Length: 207
Image: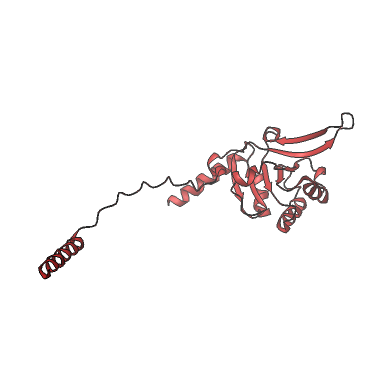
């Protein structure tokens, strides 16, 4: 009986040692999932996106039905810079930005402003009335019913501003409101001047 126990003990020790001396088995690496593109869509497309905003809803007295007014990218005027602004009627920074735009509207008259919010139309109308935007022919305000802008521009803060030149090509985006002096310069600069400025900067960098 003792001999049997001794043999069993020796076999156990040998098995344990063999386990310790074994090399670890290489695990086949799992193929990495594709890296998500960190660039927002607007930075890749470089052209003004297709959008459609609800501008107004009125009851038709003749039919009793609701008539809706929409503003889409195809309604934009030709050969004018476009400034797209995503705002919130409850955002104090948005109100400040709007006051600055109104104050400098004469210097910004070449641009066409498209302002949109996801808030309900009543709130947007209140914002519109407060700043009397209907009196400016180069400005339209509507509701982004499909929550398009926050997704397309990867918006995290308001006001978000995207500037496009007269050919509807992307120029610059502002994550938390624009510097008014710079915005005035952008909308009054011809596309050819922007190209020349970029080439000039590249030459200076090369040196």
